[in-house]
Image 1 (cartoon, rainbow, N blue to C red):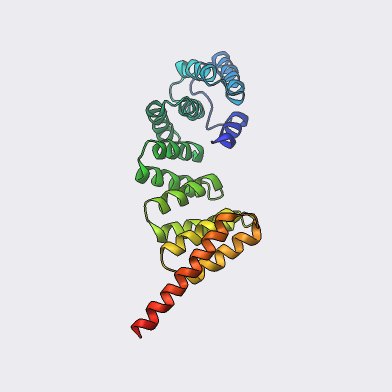
Image 2 (cartoon, rainbow, N blue to C red):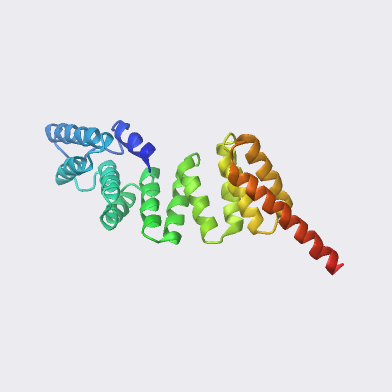
Amino acid sequence: MLKWLKTKIASKAPDATTRVADLAPERMQHSQTVKDQGDEHLKAGRYADAEACYRQVMQSDAQYPRVLVMLGFVLREQGRADEARAVLERAVRNAPEDSDGHYLLGSVLEATGRPDAAIASYKRTLALNPGLIAAQQSLSRLLLGIGQFEQAEASYRREIELTPEHFGPCHMLGVTLTRMGRHAEAIELFKRAISLNPGSGASYSSLAAAYIGLDDSSEENLALA
């Protein structure tokens, strides 16, 4: 999970928002070198070594935003969710416009059973970076999971806009509409999902269930007429 973020974080070039603050040039260069070493460890999956490097940089500047995000990531990957959350909360306070920090914090909040807080983090992520599909996918999944069907519908429709060639958002939007009792619309979504991925057994099953639901709804309407 989050392999894309590991690659993205490790490959980001330093800029004005991620420099080590108020360090002498020699110390700043050293900190950058250590950070780069941490990035290499991170990309190789050596999370403990990456953590050691990032903590060394933080000894020079404990508020270095990009290092805080990367430290939060490696703590998360080591299963230390509470530590990761504390670091990432500090990261987004120090760099509130960093969408990566908000997204990663959302993933930790989700993993530790705090869906409402995670949803807020994902929404903040998307406000900063509307094209971040991973955040959109996470938001859709959580909204559906807690029964916020109307919001989930909007989120899945945004996913379809972002990845029109993928069958997953079409299928899940169909699932959402089915749960809302909108069977006819769901049928069209499942058909679209099947056209994008003819091998999706789940979409065929869901399509059949939607037809049954549509028939049942029609019979109920006739009985009430």
